[in-house]
Amino acid sequence: GIAEGGSMITATRLRGIIQNNPAIALDIIRSSLDTPRKQQILDIILQSPLTVSILHVVSQLINNPLVPQTFFVSFVDKTLKALDAIKGSSHQVCAWHAVEE
Image (cartoon, rainbow, N blue to C red):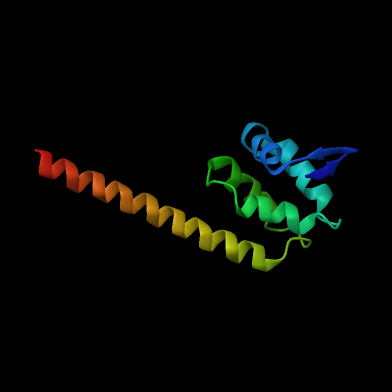
């Protein structure tokens, strides 16, 4: 996990905070960016499911010089793949409904 004020924060806990309280998550993320935990935190964000909250958090980090450009490249790549998967599954549903009727 990640030390947060002496206590450890796990990937699951950070994802929960991102979902339920993006503002607090951003404080935790920003405070970790100039520590050795930075890459671990960014990896947790990259491995999180795509949600409105995660998009909000990442959008708030775009102008932060401590976040490497490679992180955003990876995040956009992952997001586009996720959207393709969503599009693909909705096309299958539509095609399936057409057959049913």
